[in-house]
Length: 282
Image (cartoon, rainbow, N blue to C red):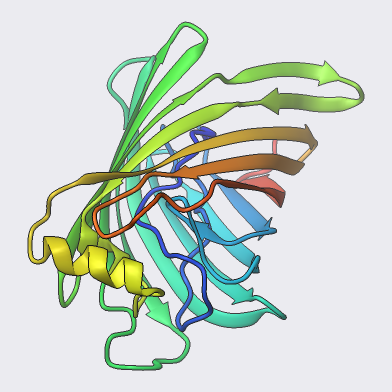
């Protein structure tokens, strides 16, 4: 089971201010290639500040994101995840189910295709979860030490929207070092685009600026640049257990309807990961 750390922040943004339902944290990267063996991955992600395409959601709000995924030897995979979010204390927000297929065109060129459905624990208003469905296509090409990824998402329910993320990463890995089976460091940078209605994926818009931006482009699907995102994840693994610590820097871009770009900010995240083969090694 191969999980490429490609820094997929995908999808649109929300700005500060507590509204319901909140946006999702930065999702775990999709499976980017099939492997010769099947396996499970259980993980718990923590983010010190919940953001969405360069815009902070909540007043320095943190989030907890439990996930369980399974990758089959033939490339099929599935993931079930939930979100606990609150500026003060965690409250359960939603459950999401994703099913997909991952494969390789060549040894250096991988891809994944998936569909996901978001289910909210509690419906607040009629506008909540108006973009619950998502179709995603992701591809990654490795050229020497550098990996280039392209992530496209089509969101639909009562409305339609789409997003595009272009990311560049430098995977560095060392085996059997400092007492760990594997140590990896994958600095990455991404530029994200989105259409205005993508802001509605998780419900009512957060601020007048966001609402103004959404009204400008309705009902077009025109993509506009939204943010630069930088990540510096360090992961150590011993046996089936891994710990991922990362620093993040988000630099939002000004869009129509905003007098100036929102301020850049940084935050820390952590993930505890358990990877288990479907069959014990003989």
